[in-house]
Image (spheres, each protein chain N blue to C red):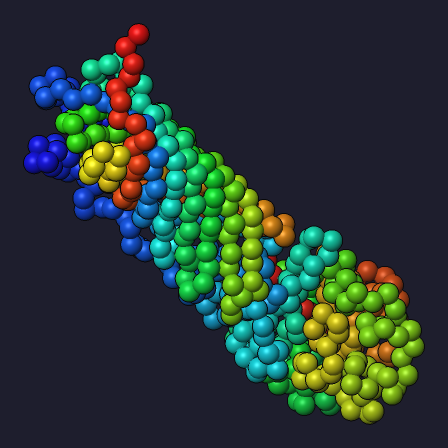
Length: 275
Length: 212
């Protein structure tokens, strides 16, 4: 026995085995702190992503309460959309003015530079109302700068992604499964001319019912840039309901491509993100 | 490399030791504590991630047999082994990686004395594994099934308690990769590190090899 100990002990010491058995949890990350394998699996499976606009941190959520005011200001909430196995994440809300100032910088407030200033401009300026008077180029520049600074992958939805997200599985004119949009039906579902009842200006995001994917304001409030920045979709508070149909794109008055460098007073944006 | 040199030095001492005859015809039930640190990769349509993490604990229960090929009177010989393994790693509060498979080994045995035997066994393992994560604040519950393969080097010391009963202590190095695919998510977990364990051995025969 003594002989064996004499033989084995030097062997273990030679191997460096004694001080480093590696049998504890070591320096690994906790399984529940949102990092490590658990965190990555969460990003791959979680139905929601949250982007902290201050730090750029992206975390996944199994459940989210979209009405939380932080998702209209300091953070952005994204919903996983599964399209034939090609998942993507799209913003639950249109980008608010509060969010825009965090993405593009506090000095950036394009909605205040509309000239001549319409009478409704002051009422339309609020942190939780959608950013508007945005050009596609301005959106791309802001997103590119933010991504570079924070290592994120924000983007603008493609035409296909936007349409798929808006339809939410429906094949009807409207995402709620109807082909007609009477004022009574539109009320509470879309911020368009027929439902504004004389009120002018965009409304606080998320004020109407979400579509089947849990996305708000896909119909109305402000137009949203899509694709290469030459199309807008979704209609606006100013425009008639038919322009806010799921399948409609471009301007309210024609189907011509828009100039990506030109800001439009009725146009905002909804962003996508890759975790 | 240092381990190999040390083992070589150890076996070089054999001629100086009292002679004992190597007879290994064993069935063994053993329990091991496994390494817990791992590297991972995750690839899905929306995210690709990699990094390192650690399980909370890792244990293995194995059952198998060993047989030594040695000439009559020799204290050294070849030892072959095979068996079933069942591994469980716990992750966080209720996550887990469960692996069931087979292990095979081929190495050297040395009968140090009539009561002590030392085995050095490189081995290979293969089987099926399932990774489970419960639903949490970051995502829904997740389960992925796949396969694993790996290799190991084990040193075992066996002490004969009675005619057919031995107790065993072992330690070694294990490297194993678990691969799985679920819901368009490809995942790999690479575990490696030292492990230790104990076992109970039934030696069904102590008769020396027959002299023809």
